[in-house]
Length: 447
Image (cartoon, rainbow, N blue to C red; front, side):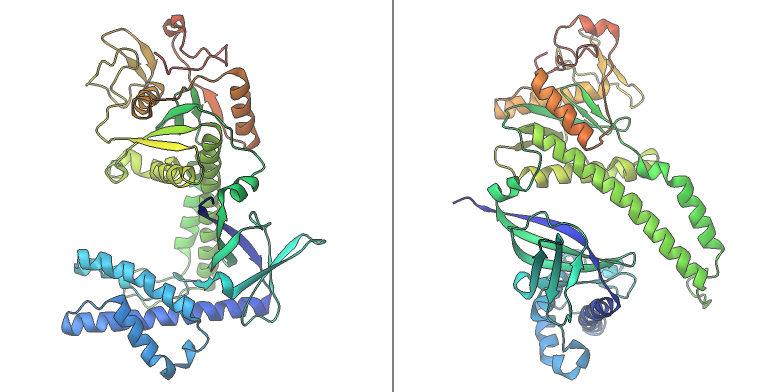
């Protein structure tokens, strides 16, 4: 029997006024539970210096629940999930109990907390085939809520549902448990049964450079929207609002409207970036059996002035996290992480000579030992591939015509911007290097 895997899908909800009022009521109930427990935690911490456990706070809440009418409609599953999340915060605070870490226990309001949790057996999803619409129902609703998007896993077993509100819109995240066979059937594009392996290098100039000679560009959604974002922030600053911490000036209606517009625009940028990353990661996993990635210290990189803003578009950490999570859902797919001290950029892919004095501005790697001139990112990706081949003992990144056509078709279907790594003319006399005029020969794997 195949093991179960867990996948989630976020879908939008089309709610009417009555349904939105009920959802807002549920959000308020959960916020009341959280704020009650946070207040108890802070009081005991300030008076007695005790760090109460989440289990103690949960027992205290259940004991005093009858005294507060606003807790009557809160299901036990939501309460249990709330205190489980609180336990994580208390654990991190115990490891580092400093006053500045008390921001973890800030009271919740409408602006920073609009979500609640239900178990899979507490909701019901029905589908009207003739209208191709799905509806979700839970206790308290008079009419089921229409689901705006199509459900990707109709045969999956729903374990949990997370309802949330973001930018005045309502969503539900459905967590499914299913077999791998059902998961693969839900994809229109089939995963290739292949043994091809690649190394990928994340860079500033191109988002991802692959050892097979392909470079995936970054559309730079944040950078392109930066001018409009600045103008909106300037307009927001001109509206009447509190200018400092102790200022009692009331926020004007125009300030509130402009804040909502700005939040929607930021969410739009985030959604574009997230969608593009998901597509790129899915294409790589579908077409290659093994992927080697580098281990990066992103926190140290963000301290550098030139990198901090670019990180919004480049998303090193998010790309690596998505690769690790998604590749584990598919049997026959592997991911190898090169250690942080592995000098993939400094090593020559041909002779393994290590070049110490290489700058970030040097886009062409020139080996002082063998004279090889090659694109810097392609050299790093090829070194990562060589490292992975030593570790797992199989794989080749040399694509034939059929495999390359499938990869190119997949990239075009998902509207992913890509190009081929350009190399100096001196390199073309090496037979296995990429030659842009011949797309079939795009391997650096065996140099």
